[in-house]
Image 1: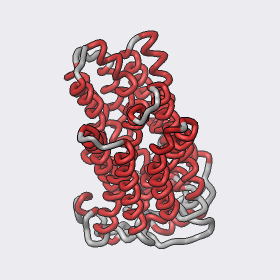
Image 2 (image 1 turned 180 degrees about the horizontal axis):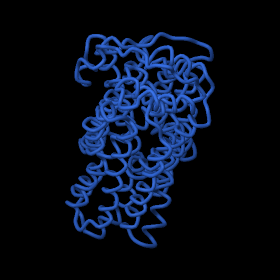
Image 3 (image 1 turned 45 degrees about the vertical axis):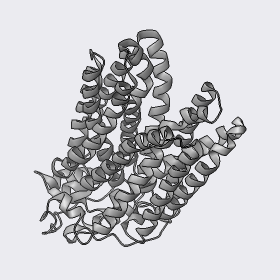
Image 4 (image 1 turned 60 degrees about the vertical axis):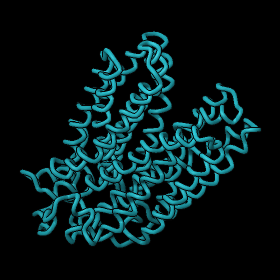
Length: 456
């Protein structure tokens, strides 16, 4: 985006329209949380209905994550070509189709393929929603705007579990997929009517009638219209988007962001996948294990929001490093605390708070690290690399558990993953990562992006 225009928006207060756009993105993430975890909500009912083996059930639980990784890597870069809003609409249609068709699946193979389809839509949607939130916010509230998306995801995961209990008991597991699909489809007209295309994309790609569309959007942002478009950056599209991520000016930041996402998502999905089972392994009852897992998700709702508030006052990078270290400490003392269930539950909530906050912080950092022409690609690839860590985490933990590792050692490995993620974030230094959250009135330099363009 033109630097002067971005400075105007960054220095201005957020309008109702800007906050409304952020709210739509949060709602998208609420549905994402439900759509992604719907298989976990219905696993027992589906397994009982079709008499599935453990391997078949594991395939169904992993299929959505494989789809999300593919969607983030393969579909999210389309946002830099066709627009963030158009990609969001496409992602909604894909995810809704996968959910609705899943309600009519006749066997595990069909359901697994449809879970991959749903994951494709969700993976691309998460990337586009985070980019739109970031690009719609001013400098002060950008970190909060993006981190609230992760709060939406945690809300969807928590509320979805409660809703699934009611639906499965009353109408069977197929109703859970049906309700999720209908809710996802209901957002298509909302996005079509209320979600704008980003200013950054309009200036970067310059589709037909760019000036008119840009000025209409500036008016809703409370800004004066432009008399003419600023001069385009000639080298902005000289390379393919993925190659720009690995160009000399951005390769270091890209590799550090990928490392941070892989490690944090590894630790996060270990915690969310294995905590109930490992609490039982450590001596708690099955009900206490479920309670611990629920409190972990509830803690996640507040973790992302608190990180966003802190990012409005302090540099986001420093807040995120603190979150990774605190998450690691909580993990190290968690298993020894299981002798006192009340203490374990408190620590479980704290783990959810800091672990989910780490994911939210990474989501907020990435958009500020790339220029508008490759922003969706950068977010998509970061999420995709993170999903690889998410996929490997339960598999590696299961193998180590079979090899005789104790719960304490497994949590220590996860703690180490968070520490390494924090090291990668700290190594980003004073780059554009700090743009996502700054102290009030503080000005920072943008990260030089591929093709010579600065991040917004």
